[in-house]
Amino acid sequence: MFLSVAGLEPGDTVLVEKGTKITIHADWSSHHTIQRVEIVQNGKVVARRDFPEGVTAGHIETEIVIEADGWIGARLGSSSRDSFNQPIWAHTSPVYVRGTGQQSEASVESARFYTDQIGEGMNWVKTKGRFYNDAQRKEVVDLFKQGQDWYRKLI
Image (cartoon, rainbow, N blue to C red; front, top):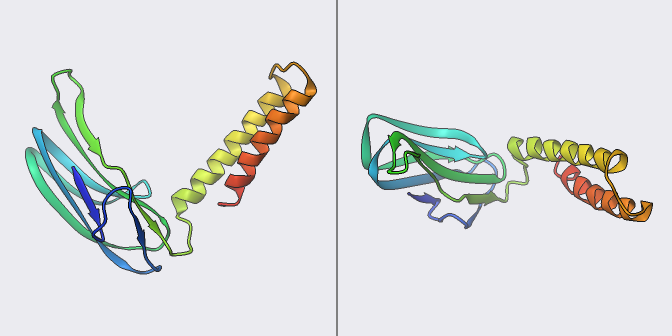
């Protein structure tokens, strides 16, 4: 599976202003049949093509307007199974999008999730964690707080 976002490949960063329209291309070739190909932006499907009969190669192209920083990837899926009886699927690495000055909704949701999870971890460390002394416990709690503060800045 190959992905191109505004002419750039996975691992690259597209620098755009908010409201910019960009073109996304995905190509694939597979020994097994593919029934679904999707373009994903920040975890949400923004374009999809279904192939009920299955295909072994193809292309999808779409344009989207960028409203926030984040990432874009492509994935495919199939009801076919490989020789190990595993479902056929693939997902590209992302092309990153920066420069809008806006955090994506997915980034904010993720930051809230990790802020909460770190808080739960800190509570466990404070109430149930086993340490040689209180200084060691404080050191771990301080590390958790640093991580929590970092995620809070993203909210």
